[in-house]
Structure formats: C-alpha cells, structure tokens
Length: 109
Image (tube, rainbow, N blue to C red):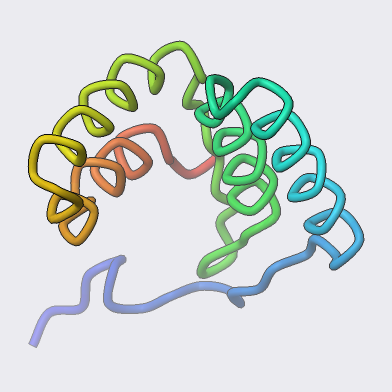
C-alpha cells in the first residue's frame, strides 16, 4: 500500500489564539453590526473568521483567510433575500456561506 502526503500528517494541530482576542473581535463585531443596523455584518463576520482561521494550525501548517467583506456583501444580500422569501427555511441550509469561507481559506507557505 502506497503512502501519500495527505495520509501522514507531519505536525501538530492547534489553535494559538487566546480567549481575550476572540472575545475582543466578537464584541467589536457585535458593536459594529448593531450600530450599522446589520449592514456591516459581513465585515464583522470576516474579522472574526479571519482571527479564528489565522490562529489555527493543522498538521503543522497554518491556515490563512483571505476573504474580503465587500466580496461577501453581495452574497450576504442574496442569502438574506432568500431567507425572507422562504420564511427562514434558507437559514437551515446556509451551505453557501460555508462554501464561501472555504473558497477563501488556504494554507500559508
């Protein structure tokens, strides 16, 4: 049986951020979201997800999130409209948000 690079992780997986940083970004994101009447919710989401991702190491390789709030904003409006049209059912299948975050996440070199 042939071994591949994916089958044999070369390092540890861990999160090197701290609770204060995560709490700080969360509070700042909540404040910005509330003060802008949810208009800047994509910005807050990007801030929090970037902190979480950039402090995550998987198999010795650090993750990097390169998504931009303006890129997310158009999707956000579309998802909001679909949620309203479907009376909230669309929120149960927020798979497009996960696809967007995954598309903009990579390993650093």
